[in-house]
Image (cartoon, rainbow, N blue to C red; front, side):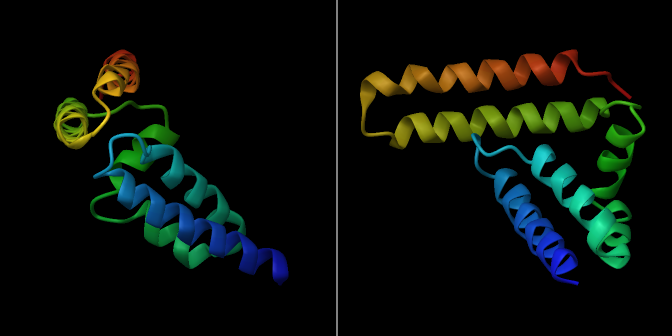
Length: 119
């Protein structure tokens, strides 16, 4: 029983972090949602089913789990949000020399997404 509570708690925290990651460029969304899915698979059938059948998050998670790929539209939206968020972060960043460092995760994530199988 304690393990199930722990798994569900970690799963809920992972969902929250994944949702925050939609808006923050350096916080990954998909890994947190996959972690939540794994935790819910052992902790709560109801939460597992909810996340997997979620109208917004579910189809992407199902495609990744089934190794089908990511829809092109999703890739374009994700990369667009990434670069807009990085541009805003660079603009408000007070340390000028650190701004170019934002290119490292930006390019890494962009390359990863473009190379990942397209649905």
